[in-house]
Image 1 (tube, helix red, strand yellow):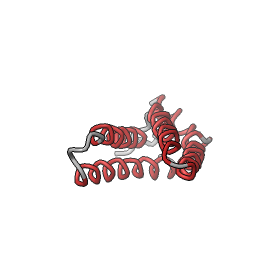
Image 2 (tube, helix red, strand yellow):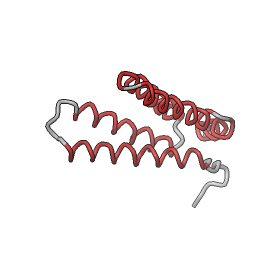
Image 3 (tube, rainbow, N blue to C red):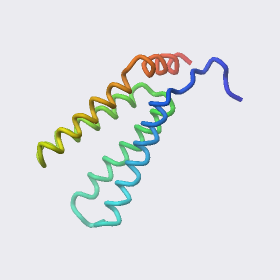
Image 4 (tube, rainbow, N blue to C red):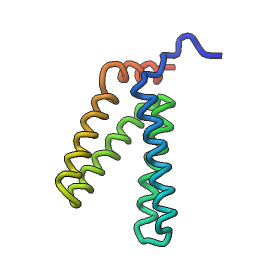
Length: 117
């Protein structure tokens, strides 16, 4: 039975939580199937696992998971800058948009309430 005092999870939190779970799972599976013996497989799997863990805890209302996802995206901005400027710009735009949704008023209110319960 749902506690009536529990705040409803904002759509942004649910969407982003599931998005990162799916992205982390699919990227890990893709890299394992593509070349499991590549020297970069383990670091790539760790990045995928971080996305899944952060997504799960985002759905559970853990404040720190928002920051983990933003650090994860910021790392992608830096890494993609070594590849191309256009990749870095796309990742930076994603970082700004997702940062707005994770740190904006509706979600901040949700995470404050989730922490007090």
